[in-house]
Structures are given as C-alpha cells and as structure tokens.
Image 1: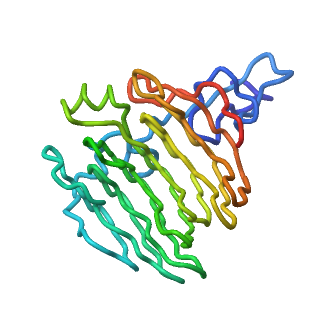
Image 2: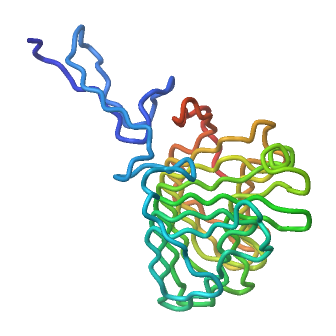
Length: 278
C-alpha cells in the first residue's frame, strides 16, 4: 500500500480540463507515486448540477406553473410550457416584486417565446432566486425573445442564478429545430435603466444570437460570476456570447472566476478558454 501520497481532486465543476491553473486542484509535485481518488459528475442528477435538457430527471414530478403577475412566491418543480404551438407572444409570467419581496424558482422549466419578465420596483430591492432550472426560449418574427428579461425602467433587483441553464438560439438554429417563422433568442437581457445585481454560480449559457447582455444604463449594477460556461449554437454566436458594460451607469465586477468558453461532449460541459472580465 502506497504511503506519502496525495489525493487529487477538483473542487469546482469539472476535473477533465487541460489547464488546471486556479481550478482548485491539489498537485502531486515532488511525488513519484500516489493513491488517486477521482469523483466525476456530469451534472444533471436531482442532487445538484446543471440541468442541460428539458428531460432532466429532476423535473419528473413537475406540474403546471401559474401565469400572469407574481410578487412573493415559491415555485418548486413547476413548468411553463408553450411547446409545440408557441402561440403566446407574452412572457410566461411577470415578476413585479418590490421592497423585500422574494421570488424563488427551484427545479422549474420554461419553454416559451418570452421567459420570465423582471418588472420589479425600486429600493429596497426585491430578490429573484433561480436554482436548478432549465429555461428554453425561441422566438417568432417580431419577438424580443429573451429567456430572462429585466425591463422596469428605474427598478432594481438582485437576481441570483445557480445550477441552471439558459438555452437560446441563433436564427439559423431556431429554423432548423422549430421550422420557418421562428427566430433566434437571448439568454438574459438587462437594460432600459434597470439596475441592481446579477449573481451566477454554476450556470450554462447555451446558444443564442446574443448569449447575455447586461447594460448598466443608470445607477449601479454589480455582477458576480463563478463557474459560468458559454456554449455557442452550432453556427456560433451571431453577435456575441456576452456584452456586459456600463452604458451611462456604473458597472462593478465583484467576482469573475472560471468564466469560460465551452463545448458539450456526450452531455458533459467541457471548459475551454478563459473569457475576459468586462
């Protein structure tokens, strides 16, 4: 039995990457043998990780979610599904929380032309928590088509997204998958004099003409990203993977750790090059 050996593990999302710098590995420097214990996770089990499809097993008991307008609520294992007709051109619901209101979405699915609309009020800011959710958004001609859209001029909120996938499409991918008349979409759109904070931990931005847009038009917008992966549509990003910048207001980057371009191989996120902080 070997002695004087280290255990080799990774504390982040994936261990199978070429460049392990800063990813939480314990190295075996100075050792000529070791006992190695490796745990692999693809993400997608009910215990955690990123659900990468509508058919993830954690959604097996989901029931229909309510539409229209919500302020304080907890949504566990709910669905908003307009597939295959996609007749609705309005958001699956509008969150109009204010002050200390909190909306929590856990193990929920969305498949709509417009995902949840963040239409909250002013200070003190309300909070939206999204965990282990799969949000699929595809548009039709004339739609804005955002998986999440913050639109409430003068409003502000804390949006905290963990272990979730925002799935959107380029125009070409939308037509290929859904047919004529469908258009591309974006995972997240934050602008129009909205402000607050966006936190993402263990999040997959998958596809889209625009993966994510956060524009600090007024006041202060803060971002905190860790283990955020950008996977393009098959024909690439039409415009950008992310566009995050001050456009009249102030943008503060509190955290930008393990934010990477990525691919998906056999249902597993394979991290690629590190992406620069805004």
